[in-house]
Length: 369
Image (cartoon, helix red, strand yellow):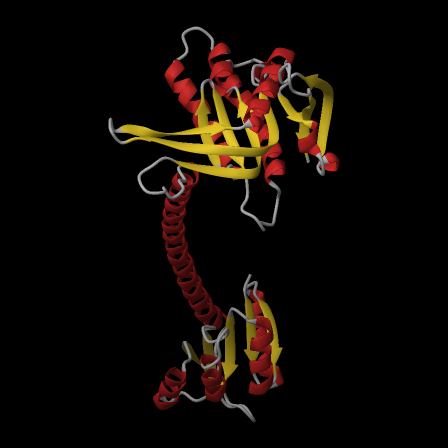
């Protein structure tokens, strides 16, 4: 059903015209002159206007001219009605912007056929425009997708392979006075839980890629392979605002457990999530840490990055304890300071760091809000 506006100063003729259109199933608005008709067109945006030519104040030609000059209603089709049958008046109507011209008197069938033709034409134009816009939008989205994909890849490489400026030709070091260290037994636990016949290489690469993506999403500053472990360092420059490195590390640890569960269930269909992720052990601790960039220009071997410091040693001890005690995530109690209301914890224990050092209070991390 279409909305049609009838503008006619003669009340009887206006009612007859409206009734003819209503009989064809259209919804009809009426206006007694051109001024009210123009305002009604602005307010209701009809699908079609049927307008008399000779009206007081604003005649039909002036109405059509005003319509065509106003954004939002300029494309509404118009049928002109008049008792004048001279070709000159027909030309004037078309020149002013009318779409069709019907001479009075007219039959219901004649009016409705003209209205149906213009409504069908407008719908076809609208559908063509929509299809064209869909195509353009799809192309624009595809182009944007390619651009964003390229930006993601570049940033990914920059984040994971960030290097600091070398001093001369010698080796360099980077010190963090305060950083959160996350250690996950990624490769050992992955290999240990693989069923026989599994493509080990692809599974390990998949596990490494998933862990790397997860840690990157939580803005790990450095990622290092450390034997069977994957080491992530979370640190921000001085004066940074936003989510703290230790909170990002805690959320990354929970996400790693979930990702590991999904990977294990893919490799071992039917295994419950708790069993699938039971082999993973993650530890977190915060404090100072130093990264060493070691080069071998003589033999041309690739550069290597080594992490050192008591913070890393403590994190490794926590991780070994987590493996032995079947904790998924172990963190130092000191690291949880300020995060108590956002974390859910479980068991606690004292972890030995060696005969000459004080034991470290360990807390089992169960979740982060």
